[in-house]
Length: 356
Image (cartoon, rainbow, N blue to C red; front, side):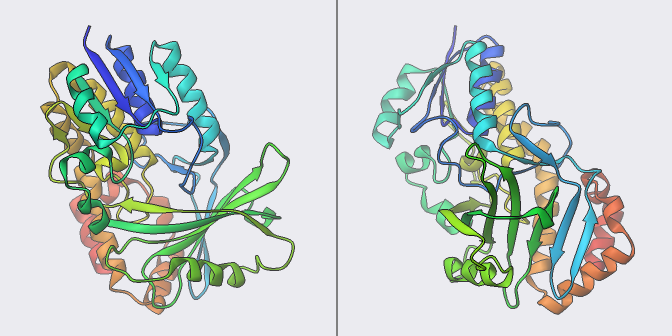
């Protein structure tokens, strides 16, 4: 029985491990901390291509409305989308439980260093690197600078307080002279009974010199979250790689999730792509790792090209222009057409190029 090592217990790693075990491989997963801890993302789960469906655990609510704040405030109906607010810790712990049930051996508090990787390559037939960005493989093989040069940056606060005005919705906002956006994603009550929300800001231009922490503090004031009734509980930050490296397979090592550069160049989300890359990598093992790269590109390349096109168009617009676009989209009720298969056809792309 071929032996598979998965490095990293995030969504990509957990789905890869469970899928590989289901295919008959002997699977071990090594996580540097504990499963479900050290979550750094905003926790919105957007199943863009509608291939995954509702997460098996941790769902706080299905997002019914996207509130967008520019010069004015606009509301878009998102009920037709597969978009949920989740608690990733709860979800990943359940994914871990299911993986173990399938036979995966999970080793927590087991970090893998670049030096360790060389030895592990000889002990396992295949390694799926889901260790984030920059991944351990890049540090071992000397291409970790790629992730610094092709990643956006985020800063996020976990905020306690009353967010009932954004009930079953997500809010994003645009600021003057800034390409990127801020978000307020309510999470409801936590285990301690506190009402919380993830409030953050992301800049997906790798060359931007912006001080995001300072800008996020301005957002806190703008949204009146400095009123004494809200309290910052935790500060997080990280990078979002928005471009795939030239290769995703290095000998018997396959890169998935953030390690494969799979976050959206448009909005920075990447949970769904991490899951899809993990599943695709595990399924490719039976035919050899080389199959993985071609299958993943077949699945995601059109979507990523579309999102890059829209992102590039947004970068050229100021806040007034963005506001006008949102106003037209709202008046024409274009949210009814939000479906990636529709948006990616040539006529839709031509229309978007004119609109943007």
